[in-house]
Image 1 (cartoon, rainbow, N blue to C red):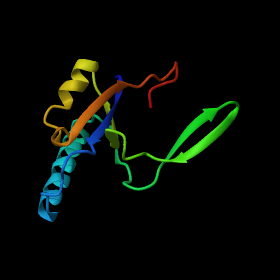
Image 2 (image 1 turned 135 degrees about the vertical axis):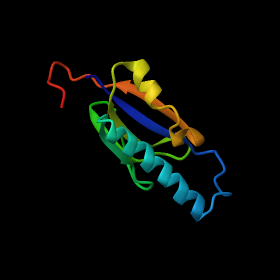
Image 3 (image 1 turned 30 degrees about the horizontal axis):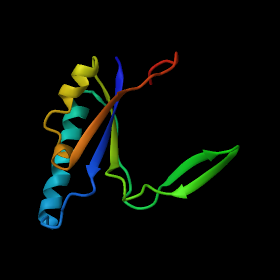
Image 4 (image 1 turned 45 degrees about the vertical axis):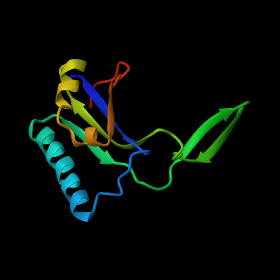
Length: 121
């Protein structure tokens, strides 16, 4: 069965200051419930939040490699997490995203994983 990476993007320009600890607890519960539902259906291959701090951006430049701190908050959207799910096709993968709590804060990019002739893991 094809696998799809869901890339969770957050709008860093949004104002989250009105959210308190109870709100964040509820939001985390919504993410957890969505992930547990996918796992219960046997679709979840991977689901991880990325750390809020640190990161690197690697740029090849004239035969050399430059490593810079990143991601940069100047970017409009920041990747906050990823999932890998099993789905029948792109349309099915998109339908699986319906009701995902990330839509309150940003978007989800859906990309099929190309195993390049290797067996699906």
